[in-house]
Image (cartoon, rainbow, N blue to C red; front, top):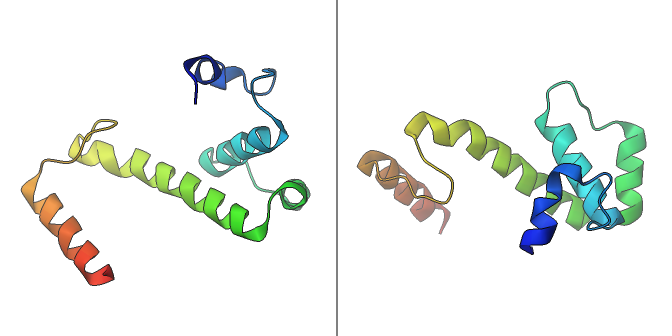
Length: 101
């Protein structure tokens, strides 16, 4: 994403930098992130009109992962773009990854 587009992310509803699908994705991220917002049936119908089922699953999973990170990382003082340098966390992550492969 260009720095100019990124600079407008806080005004995504009014910005011409984002197309219809991007606006829906940003709205979904807000609805999934903020407690009092919901993914209503009407909103989900709007999503289904623009995204395939596979795209919706991938989009929701990516948003959920970022929400998870925003809650998990501060516990271990992990800053954005950094890896966790706590040896026991690294070991647990490696063991979990090994089980998946």
